[in-house]
Length: 383
Image (cartoon, rainbow, N blue to C red):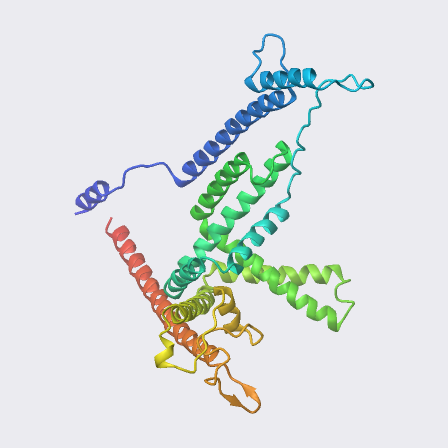
């Protein structure tokens, strides 16, 4: 019996493939080689372009068409217009100034500005609204997976921005240059892939950052009560160390999964509710279906971001189907906006359903993990 069990185990053994660490190193080396090759090509091309712009043709070089055209134009100018007697210089050449290097903070600022400009634009608002709906549905169902891919995306963005900043500083090229974008994307892909393979370590690091953030917030409160607290360096170090160790332990022991499920369900419900509110208002304005069903309604459009702010803040712009209409009740000298009531109520229902679904999935994963451990122990005992 023992021989048969061992034989079965040997037959079912998996094939030996390269490990993830080896694949990560290979991907990193490939990205580095591509970056060097791309940089060398860019440097050579830059030298040629600089020579063509300056009209420099050395010994043994063939003059380019641009240089010849400049010479012909210069000769024609000599025939038609006499040069000033006091100046006896060649044609003036202007070299465009090299772009200033951009820091990582500046690149992040530009990215955030571009995203905000797109969200504030009234054109193609169906794109952010549609993306919000899809992402929101996923967040309602798979909060843990969304959290993992958010970490991978953060690693991609961090490596991409840092690489673009270094290239911009070393080679004096702008952020929108093709070379900068290529190197940034390569570094981002490598960083994201490494984070994906070592996602458990990244989660623990997030736990440490989470603990440090909590410690910072509590330190500010304590410093407001006792100004001498921040001057005691030993106490501050011990204070932060306690929160960092606690955050690392909680994330290592998977104690954060319920918090992630609640946060994901909350964010997903907000995205889905705001996207649906925008879509219903846009359809009412386009097809005028409220004219017969709700004759006193005055639909007011806005960007998808306006609907998000409208749901979470009382100070948001009044948008929606019932904006500024008589359908908004007034209770105790306060106007309750019906669009906001409906949107928030729908978001609460989505949150409850999404959180319940994710908790059930977490429980089933725990049961499957215990069954797998039991099966593994049984196989090892029989072997």
